[in-house]
Image 1 (cartoon, rainbow, N blue to C red):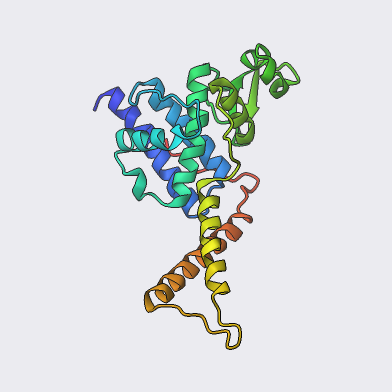
Image 2 (image 1 turned 135 degrees about the vertical axis):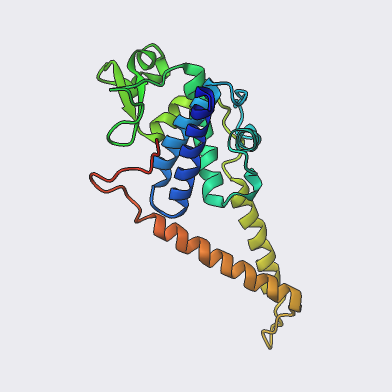
Length: 235
């Protein structure tokens, strides 16, 4: 096995294992995204995948599809919602880190003991809109995922979406409109609502999915890395 093959298998395993860990609530969303971004950056640096343009939020999904197909040899569309969300967040940071060349290391590691990524402090100081991320003027700064995202969007000059609604929010809004119409159709005297067998089955299916999603979201609120807890970060 060549060194290149070993390296490729390394970042591939890192990403897949951490996505699985996040799926099983073993790693928080931001911690997972930090590690995934770090390993995505390795894949881009090694030119395993061509570096995409991410000037607009609409390009993120397409870039994820390409990365997952080429680097991970998986189908992005077949991944769970949690994994897709993590990859979408991570790819913005990864591309931003590669384009800036600002990802750094302390003691041979880019990941800090507090699960942040080390970034070149001089790079932050040299950019007007990034100086606030290095208020102490340090040579190297460990940035949390929110800070990494802000930095990446600045580096990529990402455009602000004209609407604050996500695709999921729009889908919920449309669904609620349909529900309102159905409720409004109830007979004033009896309260009877005409609902076909197929509509009833679809409603039950949707209710179960919403219930599952709410349970997962509630569970995530309690997922926090404990002191001394190691992230799943396979070598």
